[in-house]
Image 1: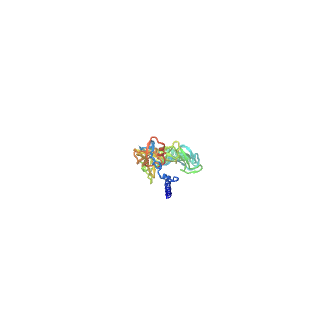
Image 2 (image 1 turned 135 degrees about the horizontal axis):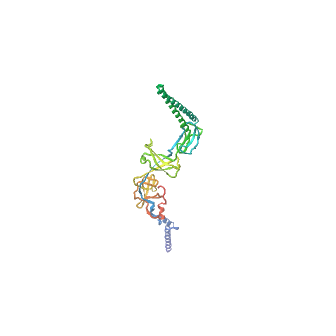
Image 3 (image 1 turned 90 degrees about the vertical axis):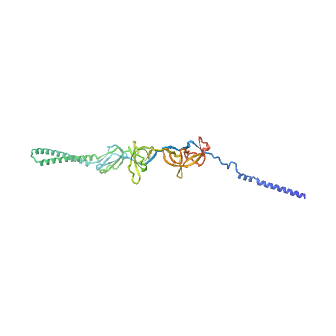
Length: 401
């Protein structure tokens, strides 16, 4: 009996030991896997900790305040350059064009002989009419002598008053015939002079309309000559803009193919709008002393109109656009805020825009457009950026955001 209790006790002790071992294995495991799962599910130090909210830093040059300034408004119009001093040389007599001494592009002077038309028939008529004139002079001299004799006879009553009157009529007829012969000769001589083609103006031969050997008729075009020393730009503006323009107003003209703008002035403004367009013609005059510009080149004129009031302005680079809405980034109470703005005038040469709504003179506006900005992010102005924070603010101005 005592041995049975001993065996039973030993068994209980073994079972108890096995139970303790089993419980210990569940908690720790032979290889520690249970404990690893527990560690995996337990919060690890620092992994879920919230990062510190580091404010974005901006230098003073990266932040601007709106400035009151006057913004001259530009009126632009375009068109081709034209040479107002353009002349077409026409044949004043018919005949064969026997010579043409200039080619297209040749420079000529006013009055210079440029060609000649064969006027052989006209030359023969000059000789004929010169003879007619001499005959009329001889006839007049004879009639004058006869009339003088008749006057003496009439004074002695040797001829009747009617005979004297007939003598006087013959004298008047002879004088008229002399005048007619002189006029005919003069006309023929002018026609002979017209055989020589003379340049009507100084300039450059733009086009030859006839070639030597061709028959030309009276008033037929032979040459076109243009004077490039002064050119004009014929453009147009809307009726709502013309009231601010006036003759003599200086303008800047940009010509295609020319790097630098050319100075000009408004020469004249049309008195009425063109039918159906509601636009009014404006002519710009510009000097071309070196004749580097050519008629037909396309040009754009820009007239600056003075502003009579101060306007709230910002750098154009500070304004971004999203979905058609203009906006700027502000620093307000230590945080970034994106603010929609309404723009007015633009000053392209100065790179500034007028802001009608959205900012005040005290607003702190980012002067350029930055990447990766977030509304509500903390921000501050600093004298120098720390390397870690500087990259968080923005690396460089970027495209519109």
